[in-house]
Image 1: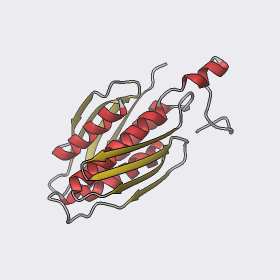
Image 2: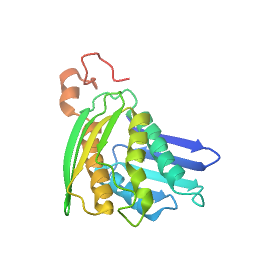
Image 3: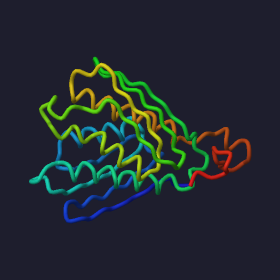
Length: 202
């Protein structure tokens, strides 16, 4: 059974399309017009082992906000499609990722309910690229559309870039674990079961 999803969003501000495969190897083809955002999304794919294609055309002559936010929205929608009934997945994932002086911890539940707590948030004036303050907003948008519960904390970051990279990598590693198929769930019933006492994660 294929676990793939795609989504597209077109507004007066952006046109974005994305497709992904949960059972990939981390291959990515990313084009957003924002170099470091391309790098972060490539890291998201690589460390989650999700194959990802994403193309975005946005009003970068205004600023990076609309493109960054809408990438999160479209990625979350594609992820929700790929997860479908969320049968057979581990559901919970967590990761601790160091990046030089920064350490990011992420705990995630792919259980169909949205909550995203990210702390602290990068300071807009602390790095060369003020738009990096939008990275948490992108992850929040992704989590909302994919209906994820996320608790993400970064400690010790002295570099805004390290702060954002560690954040995205920890998110990706937790996502990888949470969305993986659990063979024990299948072994128990011969089919993909739901990791919930309710019998549904929709």
